[in-house]
Structures are given as C-alpha cells and as structure tokens.
Image 1: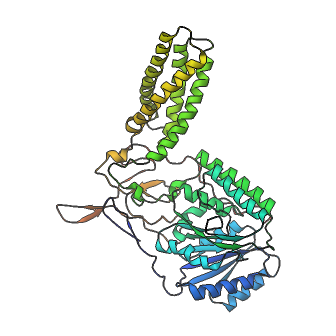
Image 2: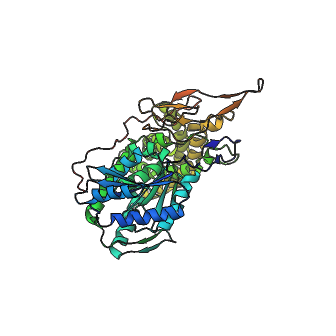
Length: 503
C-alpha cells in the first residue's frame, strides 16, 4: 500500500485498488430490529443510489437484531431479489453486536453502516467512504453539527445531541463533532484491530469505537450531512442516554487506568509526518507544555498547602524545604508519566535523583527569595511570604521544564540521529513484541496489523538492499531506554452475551 520515501517527506499514499470481480469494495450494513415496514423501501432506495453513483462493487448487508415481526422474511426476500443484498440474522439484540459481527466477517476493504430510516441524505455516502478508499483516513463519520450541515429536527433531540457531544468533549477530550449520527465507515484493516477493544454491544458502540480510535492517533474524517429527523423513530431517548453516560464513565475509567491496549492501533513509526526528523522543530513541544503547566499548577497548590501546614510548627525555611521536597517528588512522578509519557519502573530512581537536583535549584531560588524578604522586613506577613514564593516558583518553573525536557526526560530518538528504524506493532495478543520488519497480513485473523513500510538499509559495499529485523520488547526503544511499557492489564474484550441489554 505504501512506498518508501526519503526522510522529511510525506509517504506516498495510493488509492485502494478495485477488487476482483465478485468481491465488493464497500459493504454497507443496515442494523434493524422489527423494521418490517421501512426495511424494503430503505434497501431499494439505497441500492438504486449505489447502482447509479458508486463506481465500485458494493454489498448491502441487512443485520437483523433478533426481530420478532416479519423483518426476517422481508430480509430473505430482498436477498433473493437483489444480487447485492445479503441477509444476516442474530439471535440477540444490540446494534453494536450486529455491527461487530457483520464487520468482522466481511471481506470488503471498506465497511459502513447507516440507519434504516435513511435520515441522512445519501449524497454524502461517496464523500464518506472516499477518504478511506484513497488511504487518507482510517474512519469517517457524518456530522449533523458541522457548520455546513442542514438538519431538520425538533428542539428536544437537538438539545440532547449537543449536550451529549459536549459531555464527550469535556470528559473524554473527544474532538469529533457528532458521535451519534448513524452514518459511519471504517477501513477493514483498522476494524480488525479496533473492534476487539470495543466492549459495548448497543448504542454506545460507535462512540466507544471513535474515542478509542482518536486516542490511538487514527485519522477520523468528518462529512457534513443533510439530515431529516424521523418522527417515527423507536429509539428510547432517556434509556439510551443513560446507557451512553454509563459507557462514558466506563471508557473514561479504562483510559485513565491504562487498561486498554491502544498500542495495537499505533501506525508504524515513520508513517506519520510528525515522526519525521525536521530541524529546529521540537517534537511534542506543545503537548508537553500543556501537560507540564497542568502538573505545575496542581503541584504549586499542593506545595502551598504543605507549606502552610508545616509553617504551623516550624520556621519558614524548614517549612519551605519540606514542602518543596514532597511536592518535587510528586511533581517528577507526575511529569514522568503524564507530560513525557515515560511508563514502567525502568529508570524511575534515576529520574527521581535528577528531579532532586532540579528541586535543589528551585530550593535555592525560593529560599533566596525568602531570605531577601526577611532581610527587607523583620516580620513579613504570611500572605507576603506566599506571594514571594509564587513569584519564585514561576521563575523556577521555566528552568524546571527546560531541565526536564533536555536532561531528565530527553527524547532518545532525537539523540539517535543515525537510527531510522521503523517501529511496528505486532498485533499478537500473547506476544507483545515490536519489530522493525514488515509483518505480513493474515486475512481473516483477529489482529491483522495495519499497513506498514519496511525499513530499507542500503549496503554501500555490495549494492544490495536488506531489511532490519531487530526485535525488542514493547516500551523499549532501540537504544534500550523505556518510553512506553507494555500494558499490565488485559484489553477489554467484547461481551458476546448481555442479558441486561433490552435493545
């Protein structure tokens, strides 16, 4: 899929080749439950649209979620009458369960789904899947909240939709605009690795899928859509909202504790232009600055609380030294994990020792400030002491960040100017290894790796080309340092049975 390129340039991305005769490029799944009335008009309209506008072979799959009316018979009749229509029956409810089951079994390289009411204008279907076919994006979603979208729906649904997306942005730091629109697509190679990590089997399924994909650094393409509300929708808004909030809490907790193996979704190192070695452009500086400021603000509050507590039974210098020591240890640990992304116990003692040296510099600045204050006035007010300490800490903070970035937690990859190995995740659950060789895909396997480029080294003396196949453990860089340790907990697995799911 990809071709190698010289360092500092974007890798070439090729258009997905047309599949052989009989193999569809696009598989559109329509999950249904008791939709005997709307199913046939929906499928016929969608089929006519794809026949007229879609330039590749396609398939329409009806995923019946244990319907109790005549929906199964309608599905079978449509399958018999239209060659591109397939019917799939599940004996358990759950839109997420239906999508996971059908997508996992599909052989189409592009997988999509839409609601049976066809509230979304079908003219957005080709723009939805085009970035996936071209290799530009990994997932694509329709958005009713984009500025150029045209939406017709009542104020109640409008409020719920916007409130839900605000919750996602505030709690899970989601950057996509519309999680609930029933109009999404994903590349099959991405779905094979992503779907086993998604736990929900109901309406929260696609939200969870998007959050995990975004956290893993995959590219999500958004398409503004025209959307008309279906007044006859059978979705239970209150119950669905409650289940979604439970899902937000569960996913947020899993992300906070690191129990999701999102390293499986990582693209090979070098596949992202941000991995390129570009002179005078520090890597990750903006993200590290934000993390350092957040940790620093919390550490300052913690330090002031400790100083006020120690000041009740000791002098200002002793209280300052004790408070700064305790807060410095906590600050180093927090910056190690949150700001600079260093996980595991490897090097923790050395990092704390170096952090104490940085602490010593801060101690000199703050103690010197207190000494100057005491020299200026014999009995300074407590509020004055705090103001002086805050000013001194601000000065020490700038120096602390520079020392942390350049000395305590340096990016070893920057130091290895001559090493350009491509780090590739081997998606084998029982053997979390990283290799710098191309891992062949196994069609149908549960953990097919994402497209990757081998590292090519030119032999100057023989004029031959070889591939570097050095292996090392997850989290261990080529120079032996640790940046991201292997997840200690097992990834969340989907539940095949969910007695409590009434949808």
